[in-house]
Length: 127
Ligand SMILES: [Zn+2]
Image (spheres, helix red, strand yellow):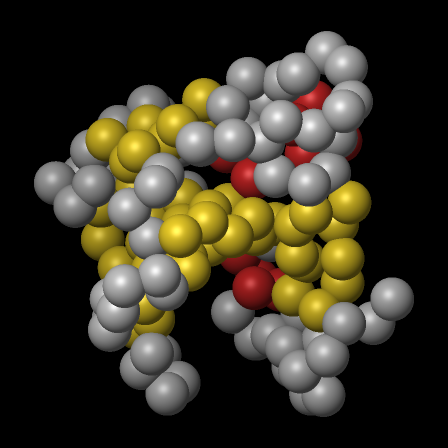
């Protein structure tokens, strides 16, 4: 739990509702990345240990996109096309994955610090 009030809902979904996400706890921080993929999807990423986020409708209602060094899959709803999360292809214990906070009510996004990450070039945070 964070110390901001009121606590926004931890439940989100893609636009059509076929993919439904429940976070285990509210994020304190999220990342906005400028890499060639993130700057197009507009995803704001919060990170969780793989397996701790409930994602209903995945993989049944999803498609994925794998690119670059092929280390992760970006997952989107098969029906509405909204990017919901990404996950590593090599799911080692303890590894993290990213959830797109754009799929949650705006209050959740407003409650976190969004850090700008230079995934396009230096691979460092810009703040
Ligand atoms: Zn959808």
